[in-house]
Image (cartoon, rainbow, N blue to C red):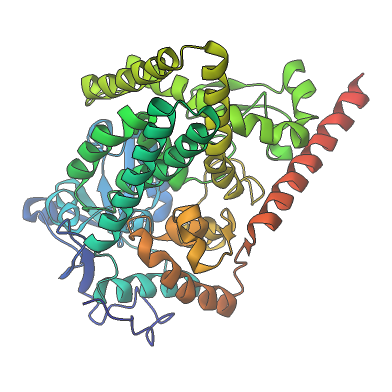
Length: 481
């Protein structure tokens, strides 16, 4: 039975743990928490460990060829591990040479601390930074949620959700294939794709079974063939997004030139560290960006087609290193299924009507995703993860929540609690609303701006930001003409 966390220790030093040598960690047993050592040791490495390492020295080891990270005041040389990191090379690359304590805690279960980290130990940091009061409070909330069992998935939640999504799928199938009702079938199909994506999002974060492999296999079975988007591609991009949300050069979710520029920092062009190529603000971009407040919703309708293309490029490219056959098989199943629907209609005009309307109905997903970040703080480079832009503050300032009634939570699929999700990405969806009630007072207490508005207000917020950037782009073009 899950309990309401006792937050009397929130905001008090460390991470809120009762014993400085023991801490609550999430396990892979359905997210159940266990009381574990804060630090585990490889005795051979411990005997050779240094105690005079400074953060300045750590910062010098920030490349793939020579990369160190700091976790709980200990230094780990992960150079030889980066290439085989299960979450991908780029997420960990963004943390090299920095204090990765909070990022590491929120993405890894207890076993990683015990079985993996000790093998890379170098020594202790002599001038390890103390957490800010806000970070200490956020850590305390996480500790209390773990202790109260909030990271445990409630099977009943996903059983009901599964029944709902299965019902949507069967309804879409019946209306589209049996009844051949293009409009009604398209609306049901779009709703199904949207709701399926939310499940895929949960699985991608291992917040369903809390076992990475189990959740990945489930996603391969239902996500790729029924949604047409590769779970591997999604994790490849999304893991980086979570580490550096809204970074101009590093976050792939905000790199949309020449179609969109979500901040004036993009008007000079930039080098995408994710795509490893220049993204210039060329004449094409200049001509398109000035219209972005007007093209936003049109692009959202067709955005899913880009995801299909990106999924295939991923599967056929060098970045898909695992489950390539399964990924491709699922995408092929989806492609043949869509083609079969076209043949079943017997009219290409009817089929194209269905296809367009299905993507119109499903575009609420793309709108929801972009509302979460487009209008929020954008920055250049990597966050330093120091006092001014430490992990928790950076996550809060770059995300936006959608304030809605609880009975509308199903519409947003958990993405309406974007801030809480970014702070605690492995927290099950059904706990995010309660987590919000704990985080908001902490933000108010420490003067950290908590971004939240209604769905309508969020749309206005994004359109206003896009319009501001569009005007700046137009002014530049006029000046250079």
